[in-house]
Image 1: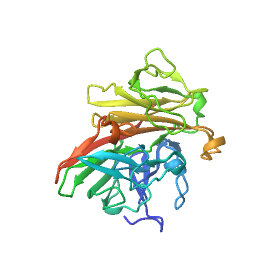
Image 2: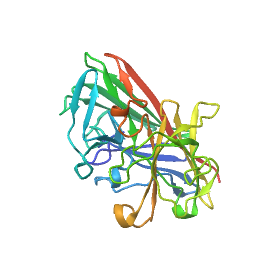
Image 3: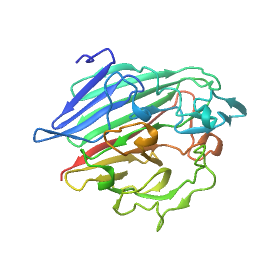
Image 4: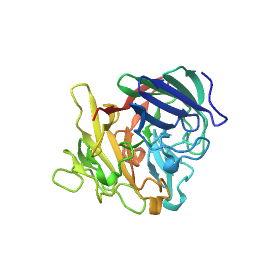
Length: 314
């Protein structure tokens, strides 16, 4: 099945599910379920061939979120990365979200892409990354791998800037369940950690049971996640009417960054109102300095993890 246009969009289908993946940033441009002829959106989307608002759907690697001042120390060496978020003086969201990934496979229900991370300013660690988006009876499963193709150990982290929605329901009319035990406090100016993780139980950050999102504003890293019997942690966005949207992660993702986008300031999805990002991350912001959940890949080592989305019948 060929790509549909010059923007290199790859449609996939299975049963009532449809999705489209793009080459730039290996992004999930859209994901929906057909409800008796009516499309039910599970993610925010954007027009093909245009820049995704707020990096929606893109892969963030070989680190997610931010590195303070673009500097980190690893294996006896000081590194200084390009400041890709100059207003906050951070290196933000890795090296691959604006690059074109290479198509490896495209079938009716599956698309696989890969990219080589070469040598960049402050980054002397070559890697090969891959991502596979696969539709099945249970919805979408996304598999990520990272291989250290260099000759020395390399630091690594992964995030996905995924947005969730429940059809056309406004966010203020939905409830959220987020199985997290702690949050990491951050500086609102630079979005960097300002202390150790703190418990969320009984606070405004507690979404252990379904809570309304009306008036809730978040840009928060959560951890100590509750994994179900199958090894997956599930975040549930429930509209007042219709099926819930579920985003799940496996145990290799130890963090979720949850972000509510404000169309008045973020200039994204003005026709939809507020939007909700639930971002699987293997480590928190500035992990290459704190060392919290930082992955180290030995030469030749391959690491993998999965996350996905589904729709629960309403």
